[in-house]
Image 1 (cartoon, rainbow, N blue to C red):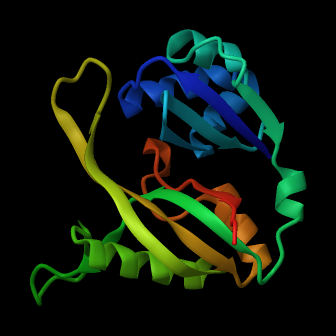
Image 2 (cartoon, rainbow, N blue to C red; image 1 turned 90 degrees about the vertical axis):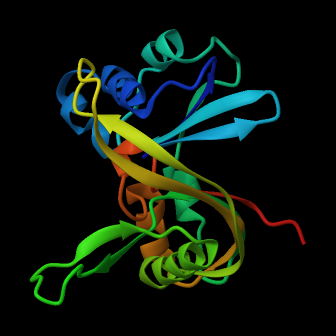
Length: 207
């Protein structure tokens, strides 16, 4: 596994980022490029693209199309960090995710429909439930942003084919199941992973 960081010159539409990521994993890995996790983060002096991938990416296509030739652009092995995770550790975290619920529109419906969780209370409750599934306990958390993202069927189609609500969480968590937690870090949380949702990242918790 690898963690990649690229400083962005601009923030393209998610569809464009998907195309750039395909170019960064050529050959036999291109078909699986969309299995990788990615997220765009705000910095004090710009924005960055973070990517977690199972294969080593080529930074040049990303930097050329949407990024900059910045010395901060780098790819590092992720496995050493993952191997140091243990139960009971506390970490600051950031997660951009697509919180959704399930319900039937009518009593006669056989299947439940997905719907976006719009309020902060619903979104935080969703995150707590995800923690139970993925080996962590949320101790503190706030929603720092939420936005609707539009996705087109293809680059020539001017009509939006779909949209999702991307919600960014920040807070403090404690690891409760290190193995399940590693899986969440490498495979993501929730839906919308090909469109910039699901990537959970950690930072040291300073007492």
